[in-house]
Length: 259
Image 1 (cartoon, rainbow, N blue to C red):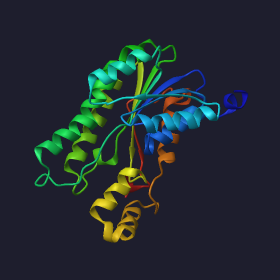
Image 2 (image 1 turned 120 degrees about the horizontal axis):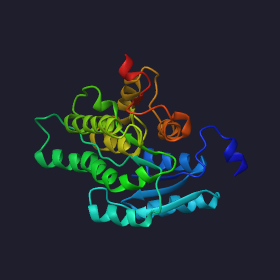
Image 3 (image 1 turned 30 degrees about the vertical axis):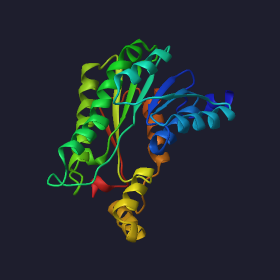
Image 4 (image 1 turned 45 degrees about the vertical axis):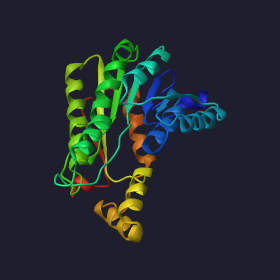
C-alpha cells in the first residue's frame, strides 16, 4: 500500500465501477484503476470473463469484484446497485459498433446501437447517481466516447450518431452538476481491441493486414491505439490530479482529428 501511495494519480480509498469491464478498453481500465489502489467493480454481461479478471487481480493483492451487468436491462443494473455501499467513480465503457451508411443501416440495427451505446449510459448513470452525489471525494464520471462522435466517418452512420450523443450527455451532465460531479469523456481513435479484430475478420478476412495498415495510416502517429493508452487517461481523469477538469472531451487518437 505504501508503494501505491507514492504513485502518480493514486486512487487509494476510491471505489469505481467499470461497465464492459471484461475486455478491451474496459479490461485495461479495470487493471489500471486497481493498480492505482481503487476498489474496482468489474461489470460485464460476460460473467465468467469478469470472474477470471477478478481472480487475476486479487491474486496480485488488488481489490476487484466481478458482477454480471446487462447495461440495457434496468433490473440487472439495479441488482448491481444493491451490491454497492458507495461509489466514487463511474466509467461508462460498454458499447458496440456497426458498419454501414444510412442507406444500409436497418432500423433494428440503429435501435440496437442506440440501446447499447446511448440508453445504457442514461440508465447506468441515473441508477448510480445518488451514490456518486453522496461521494465524499466528489463523484466522477468518465464516458468512453469516440472520435466518431466528433467527426464524420464513412460507413459508420449509426456509430457516429451514438457516440455524438454520448459526448452531448457528457457536457450536459457537467453543466447540470458543476460542483457535485466531474464528468468527462475520452474520444479514442482506432484502438486494437476485440471489436477491431472482429471488424477485420468479418469484413476484410482476405486482406486483414492491408486494412490494418490503412487503419494505422489514418492516425498520423503511425500506429493504432492500445487499450492501455486509454486506460491511462481514465486513471488521470478519475484521480484528484484532474480536479479542475470537467465537461471536457479528451481525444486519444494519434493526431487523427488534428490532421
